[in-house]
Length: 297
Image (cartoon, rainbow, N blue to C red; front, top):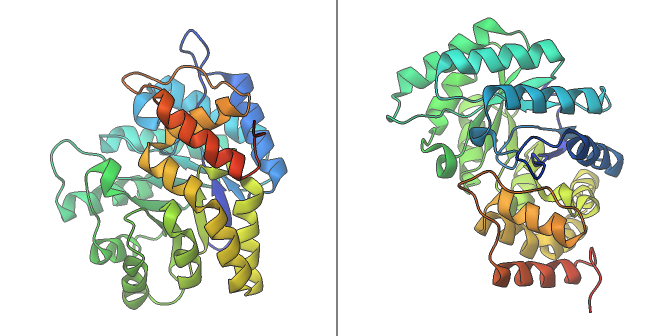
């Protein structure tokens, strides 16, 4: 799977109805729009999909909707992280049964986990499924920072084959290459570092941006594939204000507001998350007008 999973990996938001239920119809449409726009993979239940705020039943519901709607058109990378190893195994097995191409795991903890506990966590899940596993390192959301040394040990587990890094430090990738060799499958999860990560050799970019600017995201990747760094820089710096905004204000809030400005309501955010304040929405509106994805006044 790590050889197949390349390019723009899109993370769909989990939309809700006015009564707080998962909006199955809208989720299917969002996924369909992303695939039709040309993204290279779909990753439900990532940060934008508000995985930690969903019940087990809702998580299974989202995974099933997305995998069925994708229908094999592109690979699917399903988030299965949970606080306990038992629940992580449960969700990983469910994703595999549904036909997911791979699963992604970020260690989640209340108590800080030791390196040995983290490694055992992944080993236990890996023994229970046959599909590939991506290690997700995002200390800002998970509360744990996996060192390159620990990640290199995780990559020795047979079906742990990929790493998504969201630390904001592209040097982590260089260190992983030193430890694991040129073939390490690294995916960038830090939106403002998309260009630097691709130049450094990242295989893909995991991002929520395709909700709004899929053409620009794909344009950047295509330019890198052609070796046209000048075109890649031009594309990247055009979309950078939007990428910085969604990171600064939280992906669910920012993507929800951006879709609303485009005329699509994804419903209320799951409490305690709240909608963007009006002044931030206006700032976002100006960015989207500049990107020509919504009309100006």
